[in-house]
Length: 281
Image 1 (cartoon, rainbow, N blue to C red):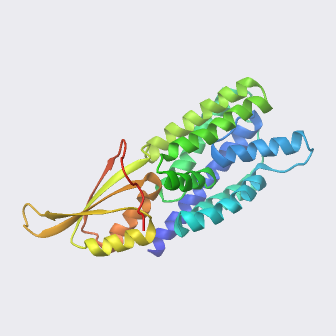
Image 2 (cartoon, rainbow, N blue to C red; image 1 turned 30 degrees about the horizontal axis):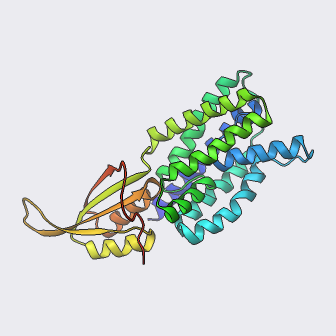
Image 3 (cartoon, rainbow, N blue to C red; image 1 turned 180 degrees about the vertical axis):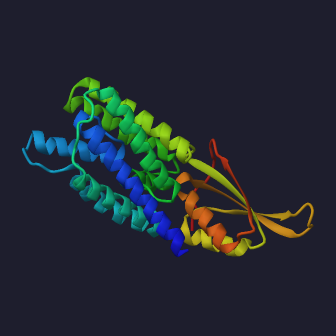
C-alpha cells in the first residue's frame, strides 16, 4: 500500500509538471486559456497586471482560489480525493513559479494545440490515479451530488465563461483558440482516462457485506445487492451494483483489491440514470 500511494503521489506530481509546462510554454504567452480554475487564474492574473498593474502570477492566484475549494471538498467530497487534488494544485503552483514563461512559437494555433495535448496528458493521468487538478472538478462534484445532474454540465458552464472572457479581455480570436485548446485537452483526457461521466460497476463477490461497508465509508453512493451463483462452482455469491462518477473509479478499484482481490468486477458506461444517484441516509 505504501508503494501504491507513493506511486500515486509521483503520478500527481508529474501531472502537475505537465500542466505547468502547458501553461508557461504555450498558453500564457499566447493568451490562450486553460480549462477550469487554471483558466480562471490566468484571467485574474491578466486583469491584475493590465488593469491594476499588480504582478500577481497565475500560480499564486490558482493556489489562493483552491484554498476554499479544498475546504469544501474535504467536507463534501472526500478526504483522500481532496488531499491528492490539493497536492496537485500545490505542485502546479510550485512548477509555475519555477519554470520561466517562454514563447516557443508565434503561431497561436500551435500553442493552443500543443498546450492542449500536454495539459490533457497532465489532467488525464491525474484523474486516472484518483485525484484531480482541483477547483472546478471539486465544485462540479459537489453540485452534481446536490442536484443529481451530470458533472459535465457544470464544467461546461465554467469553461464557457472562460471562453467568453478570453474574447472580451483579448481579441475575439483568442476565444476561438481557447475553445480549440479546451477541445484538444478534452480529447486527450478521453483517451487516457474515460470520457464517460458516470459508470456502472457490477461486482460479484463472496464478501458483499465487507465491500458494502468500505464503499460507503469512502463514497456516498447507493448500492443494490443481488444474489448470484457461480455457473461452474455452484457457490453462492452476491453481486453489488452501483453507479459512480469517473472520479471515484480509482477509489473503487482500490477498495475491491483490499477487501476481495478475487472479486469479479465489470465496469460499463452509463448513458443515463433515473431515480436517486446518491445514497440518502
